[in-house]
Image 1: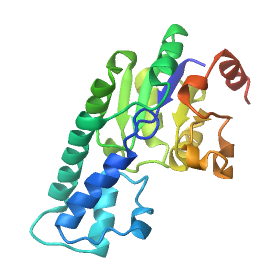
Image 2: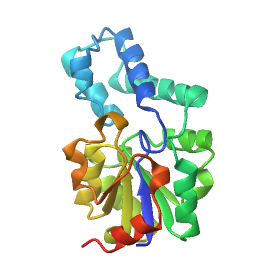
Image 3: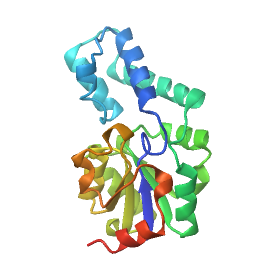
Length: 220
């Protein structure tokens, strides 16, 4: 194996609550009834797809979809700067792969302008050789495009890459890119069978060690 590629939201930073807060605040301001039932369907969409989703259910006037989308992104950026916290073990796992001389990348469904906000907030920019956002792809995760783009930037074959993910959507994206997968699910879903398609499942990033690396390297 030659490279490792991380998802961002929910894998490196505990930002899911911030997305929820920002979306509820901004969409409610244009008359959307942000119900829990419908919100559950938007959890792993790109920001543009989420905006289009809510507009299809509660069409608003006075603001373009692009303006509303940007207001959500701006609010998330503000919340990250204000109270963004790393997921447990971020520094440890990045240092581990740096010592192994792996190329390190990032593939996210989040808008590209949030990537430096997160990396700077967590103080981990120095670890990354390349980053990619689904914003610049035709389709976001679970499509493999954003992972394939990062592998291309790193100049490493996808089959020589390890992907760290916290969601089924991301795992499917990395799997379709033919990468080896380490799942780090939310604690509340750790036992869920849907994560069993990953090569390794961990409770936290800091658990990853030499034996896991050897195991994943030997996976067919």
